[in-house]
Image (cartoon, rainbow, N blue to C red; front, side, top):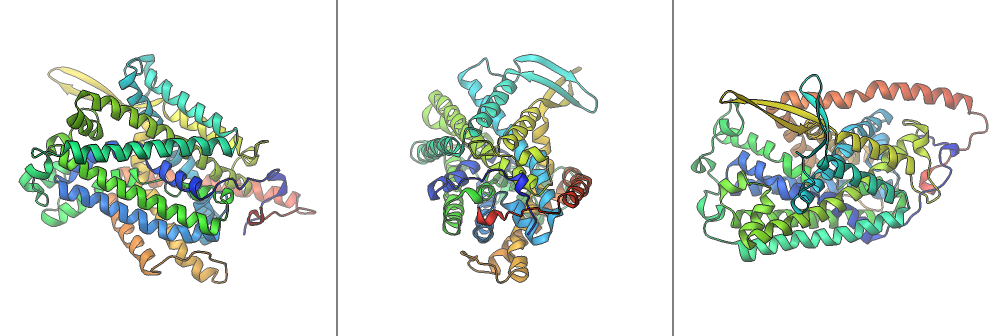
Length: 517
């Protein structure tokens, strides 16, 4: 196990999370804006209700099997950093660092930025002043199709990130109170959407009745429309595009591993971490499938594929009229607020663990008087806030005029990183097999049921999906892997610097093992 200097751990993280708290972190980090938005693109890609539900079911299968495997690692190594520690122990420090690097550079911070902007966007439904087109600083064009701006929508997102970062520096008790409150509320709101769609929205003009469930060609779908340039045809083309349609559901179901980042703060982790992972993931996967059933029985397929705002808003409006739009906006505001809190709360623990291993800035390893990694929270919050400011610039010529559309850089970065992030999940599941062989005598309070078939199933499905995404989007996937690999020179530089410090401090150094914390 890597050595962690006493100098870098002046205080201990406190075990302040029970089973309910840990479960709320799982559920709250998963339920954000994705379930309310991404089904529109997935339904456009697959072209039928049946294949839409299949995409969500397969994503759910990956989530549940991944959680079954992750639970063994979490119970075995309940430490700050979670997945970072699992990869480090299974494959070496470079693998753990590359995971933490991509998490800081794009995955966690980019998701925090994306969820914060989603919060601001739906806040604009209630407060029109908050708008992506209401600029405090107009877009400043940069080279390469990028710009920088500050709209009231972006400002609201930055304020949200700053507020939640500050509240989480006040101690674990404050962070978990916010998390539990908003997770209970938004879970109830999602359940309300499901009930309203199934009980009040169900109608015979919906996709469930007017569209073919399993033959998307009967609905006007073609593989080339869904994926321009695709050479495959027939069933093969449909299966390949189904893989790409899983991108949104996987994004909506991501972050279930965040509770492992806080492993050293969970009481009785050998029992509570597996229970929180399995209960939380099972609940969210079930709710997500039911939400998509509600979409299918409420909306016609063309409206599902291209809703004016979001597919969830369109569903509520169809069931309740104009009031549904306001109710759904309020529900998404609550959901994104709670989701961002969970992401901010958990993510900082990874950078803290990296710093304790001397693989990140030294000050990030410091805990404040309330036993939380305040510097790690601040660094994460600053970078996430900055990611809300750059914009992508798209120009479209029509009828002699050029329309300029501004997108968000973090959205582009998340698209790049999804295949690489899937590889890290696959490596984590593979770590269960590797550590069974590498450390067979280590205590395992929980063992993956169905071993080795469950991890093998996850690795097979995730590998096929990764290859599919790389084939269908080689440029974006390649950029994503390059983003991860930029961490290699940084890793070697930090390793070299850490090695020099260790030689200087070799005499009289005290080693602390976080397992005893």
